[in-house]
Image 1 (cartoon, rainbow, N blue to C red):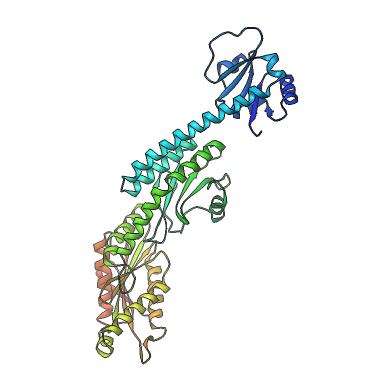
Image 2 (image 1 turned 120 degrees about the vertical axis):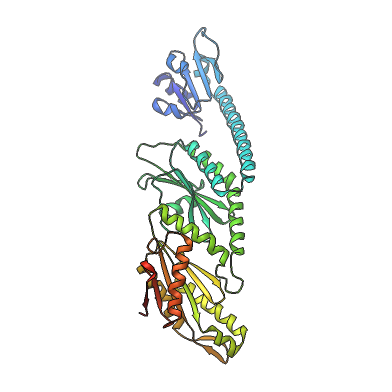
Length: 430
């Protein structure tokens, strides 16, 4: 049997029990503190008054008579008869422990189901994330944790809730979590991995084959948790993963509603909400963000010469080239007609200019092949504005970028304009 039996009663008793019950594992000393079943000699009075915290069944050995009322979980057995034939009493103790643990697991499952029912009625992802993270921290007995949820709008994992003051949005795919540690957690049976060198516990949350979220708990040099806590957390997270899956599917549905039907770039509705979020994130973390407005030069001539179907094909190809020229975290939006916008998180003015020129060159790199006998070339005029240099609100940035773009549009075309203080504009054709 794998059930370890703790013995408080001296090495002589331990030796005799090992001899008379070879199917059990007996331990003494500090190891007793982790045992569900303990054998206690009445001479170990301090143990009787303050039983080990994890013990569920205590086999109390005595000679003659025993004083005091029996405590819950105590089995009183004459010492001589138990030591001579301990197997039957120990088997009963193992059965009792199994029953108690099973009952506790059922009670826990009912509590989890109750919480799941409550969470399913909450529409706000942040509130759900807070409840889940706080429950995990309570089970582990730790303090600082963060729940990252996958957001298809930005194609990365973002902070949905955190109680960790050290957490920062970095724009990484999964901020601050080493890939090897995540892989170790995913490949473990418990979906749980702790690394003291990295100072964290990582707990992935899967729904079917989707990694919908990851919880990271800070683990300091003096923080401790036990195996039982890890098992309980894993059981809990498996129970509530379905709630996060529902949030994830809802987010994906919203994402589809925010796509332009023709180009599959994001639409104006997405632009309005997401730019607000990026500005707020930049403000919170004293970071920068930029936007690029671009308007295609002379698309009307394509429509007039080849028809509106060719114009629509051109817009589709333009969107593909823009997407291929920017980072995964940059968002490409069809702002309206033949005008696009690129939202660049954590990007300053100089970096935004580099992105604009990369996109400009991608558009000009080779003709657009629209049909067997239709090849066209098209350029664009670009305008850039950066938070907080050119504005601290969404409307300020839009106005500045739009003005910079139209200055290019009305003069040189096929160039990049940058908003500067005083609404002065600079043009660049590098």
